[in-house]
Length: 293
Ligand code: GUN
Image 1 (cartoon, rainbow, N blue to C red):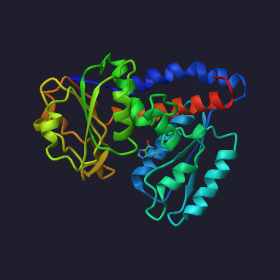
Image 2: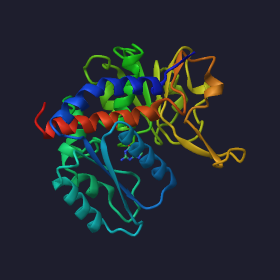
Image 3: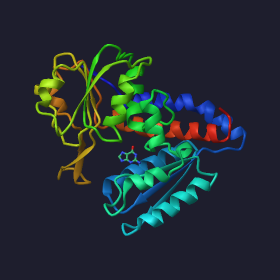
Image 4: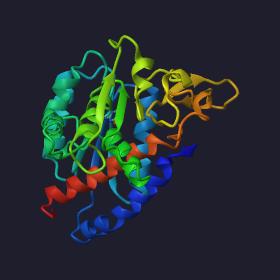
């Protein structure tokens, strides 16, 4: 079984970005990202911190704006409007999930599509659906990049995605089925309304698990020789660890290691790619907004 290392691929992405970042810097442009975090969700805090650390390590600009859980939808909309107008931010990212009293769609609709480095705005998702992608959601884009790096061509293959979220499953289904180099797959989405998920995933050449249930996918879901992409980042209690929990994927990796051809590990698989694609999208936003491309 081959491990598909997102850590390695992300390093390759950062190397490729160096020249583009230098070109911008020569024009006194530092790619800048505003990260908005509302409330105290512990996992969100960790994600936001790792994004900020990565931007700092590449000498890029990022600012995390932390708002209390009690922030109203109107206050958050006002903040987005201010960030849209501020030219030091080329990208705006609102960390999800938002508190339940805020309508996520209203907030995402307000982000300028040109600054929507998460690719969640309906204009960007719509363009992806039409096969003319602009900003593509970071996790699905990062998965395509892993497959490309390891010369896994999806053309003519059967891809089954488990999960239909706007963040992963839905854009992933669009990307894999586009008539483009490396894609062109026959894509199926399974979700909570699917009657017999293992029956469908057992037909898949490539399975992409994005459900958010720890280690749900075991050998009964998988055909011999399949490629498995594990998008899960689930915290499970682990008293022997100092922080009290460990991260596991949506796949029970031990149970399938003798059956699959390749798998993305957790951690070190999809996770590092999400951040690498956020950096890439922010650099691209800076290039576009400053008319370099
Ligand atoms: N929450 C989980 N994944 C993501 C992501 O890629 N972007 C944002 N903004 N929030 C998330």
